[in-house]
Each structure stands twice: as structure tokens, then as C-alpha cells.
Length: 116
Image 1: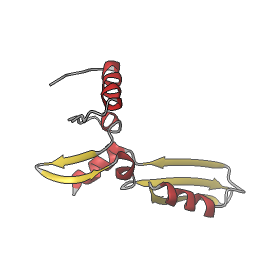
Image 2: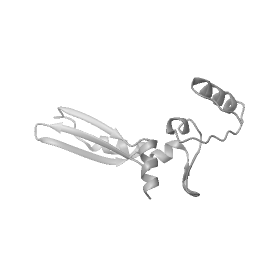
Image 3: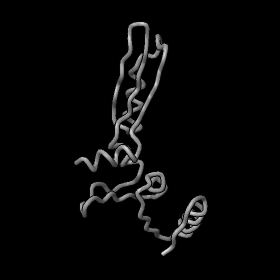
């Protein structure tokens, strides 16, 4: 068992990965989990999700807020790149005065999974 902190961890894990080693990482920090090839999210002995970080991100939502002279509208879709591209293609930004976007990260998705 090896305990690593800070920058040494990323370099060490990257080196082992490049050597084809399998690494088991146990962490509650989602920025660490996002470095892994696959994630297993466990809660009270139950497997809530098992997939790549990118695919688990699609469990979340992507929101875009557009403000025009007529008012403000918010549009929402899944965090899937295909769905986001489709939504953006269909939106009219011509009269936009302000555009903002927000999306769920692994932390917020984890919290939603834990709610059940």
C-alpha cells in the first residue's frame, strides 16, 4: 500500500499507468477519481455506478442561460457532448446580450446518486 499526497501522486499514477499497471484508488475526492480510467461509486455496499468518468458525467445536466431584450431563458440537457451540440445548434444566439452555462461535475453527480 502506498500513500501519496499532492503533485507526487499524479506523476506516480501516470508512470504506473504508462507501464500498463492496474491501480486501485480509493478516494472521496472527485478530482482524483476523474484521473482514473474507470470509476466504481459505492455506497453502503451498493454499486451505484461503474463506468468511465466521461460516461458518468453524462448522468448530470448541462444548462445554458441566454438573456435577450425579451427576457432570460434557461435550457437544459444531459451532459452528453452529442446532446449539448444538438442543443447549441438549435438555439438562437443572434439577439443574445448575455450567455452563461453551467454543468454538473462529478461531485454534484455523486451527491445526486447518494440521494437515491
